[in-house]
Image 1 (cartoon, rainbow, N blue to C red):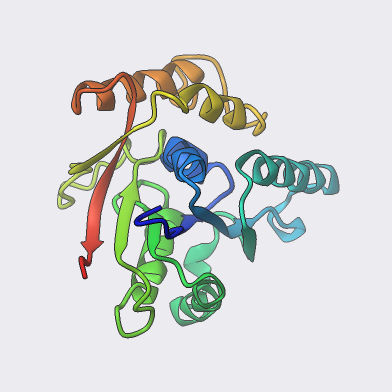
Image 2 (image 1 turned 45 degrees about the horizontal axis):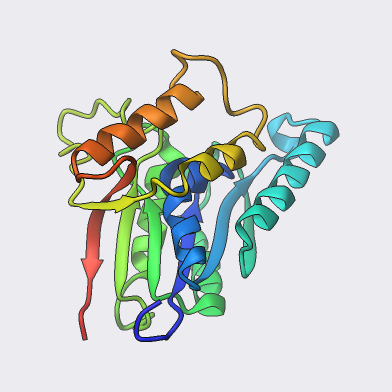
Length: 228
């Protein structure tokens, strides 16, 4: 919130859980500040991808629980098959994503880092980047890329610059709640040294906090900022 005006925030997630791993603490901070926070999910489990009815119903319930936990103003689902975004024409993904952006008219957008090892993350970034053009959505004033455990740190492309954050957001007051929300995704967390473990989440928050003078933080690559 700035000058008493609520900021419209859009968190773009290739898969449900990426938003919480990447920027969950920051989203909670936005909510605490009175901002309007929205969630865009690009993919879903599908029968064609081999997921059972039970798995899909469980994931739907998890999404509903996570949405309530954050208090999202809206949840928009594009419904593309998970791990298969590389089979979808980019123009179709951009068109569908543009509709979601149009519905929200966000001021701030959180995106996955393009260098993540998962192709769904890179493709999501490319489609969202097309939506972040100023002449398409002039409401967007800030775009930041988050890091996702088990994806960002495993990117080994020698031509990539790597995740080198410039923005750090203190989440010391929200870290425990972020982890509570992560635990809603029962199948995504496992025991250390699995990267998607509570120990790793807390360690990354401590590392980013130590880089920015706080007890815990999330780090971001700033892709765009417009100051009027």
